[in-house]
Image (cartoon, rainbow, N blue to C red; front, side, top):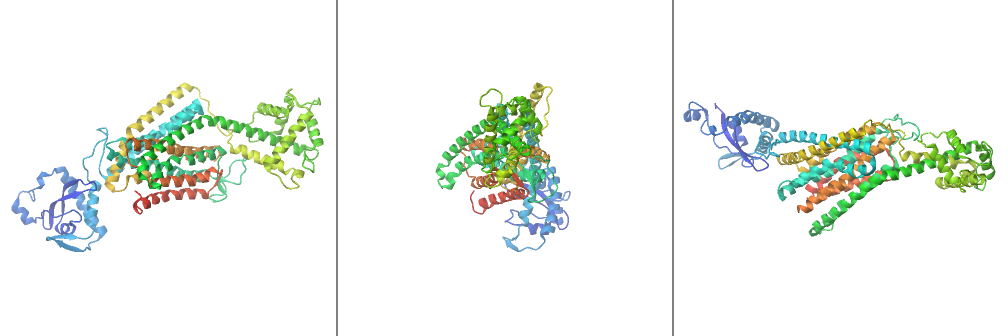
Length: 640
């Protein structure tokens, strides 16, 4: 174009193998510098100003550029020239130069960087999803599409979560809460997995199914590491505080003195989560035993076990509220027993046990006469009710009439609706024996000081608190349940439709981004998709911030339940795709990551209800370790 500047074609090939010609304006010396067979760039023709004038005086260098559209010239000439100058500034000017057939070449990756940057902004033909949704093969374009489609999927997941919570509040846990809602809450993950394995030919499905496995592993790891640890940090309080007092957060980030507590039902949810990894182990057995010919049979067996676990889990969800109510009622009755024994110990004229450790009949008879207000020799239901009201049980949502009826059933052997002195002595003796067995008292002075009664009272209060009574929960009464149920169904329908429509383009965007950047699609879906398909993140952190035992328990139960549904429902769909589409099961490193995280966190949560702040450091560290483990196993040891 003028002295020392040339206009030339560059024939570039991107990582997908597609070639494209572009026109760039660069200095002649720069053309000679970047020309390299290694970088797939060659000088086609270089014209000085004098040669241009001889060929076409009216327009410099128009011999072949007229075949390119004007839009291509404007799109590529100036940006590429600027990128080349930036490359030179970044990588310097030194190079080892050689000559091949008279064409100067460089043994440095400068040309390769140029090609990658051209791929960053260049656009090629791509297949639009459904024929109208936008698509692109560029890196920046696919990042934008992943963000847009990911947010839409997050909105769909939020609709499904809100609809499930509304229906659960209206219809109760029962069949709806046990069968219908757990499936709906896992629907976004399931639809994305379906989209990754149903589209295109078997070869295309085999390529894209790694997106589904990335989501499957990423959801499990993200929930049990980043979200779990964040909930511990957000919900922490002083662990030395008693169950009856309100939680206080005065110790800051004390690794041992600050943390969270959960109820006993949360440990059951963690154990179920640990059991849910069994199908992964079954599917992986041929690789472990090096009998890959049996891989298809193992996938089918894992699918059957996974579906069976799904049905069993749903049935457990149906009957779990009934089980929980029975356990809670029993805990409340024990709380009444311990409260009455504690009251008798304080007001008795003597010790409740003799030196031999037997019930002190004389003292118990005096207590009977104290409770028997009308002195008729019997204790009536009204007198028992007055006793319970006078004790003033704190921290217990107690039904007084129910407590009176249970005491009557324990004491009234003759079933005449009144308790005589012999029945009272026999009943109190039975309660004292239960207190001794529960506390396991063994010192010589325990029965003399009555310390075992105090220990039994404290232990019973803690057991009741761990079962998670609902007295701290604000219940909102719905004015129009039918209308609220109709709105909840509409929200569920909206979330389902949105998830079904945008799952496929999201998978395509992840796959195209992986192709354009060379990053395996598993890692992209592992990091990005769990945040798009999981709506539990925000709600779990909000629940944890209330710093109440019940709210913390609900938070961690929700996390364990989501992982369980991912391990059985989402895995069932994934195994069905692998089996019925005759795909290859080659996910050893991914399965190992899921097993490691579930087993470590399951062991943490299955046998303890107190989690000091240091446990969040363990959970946080598992996330980068999981990514590193997959990379090392696949690309260093060659598992994949």
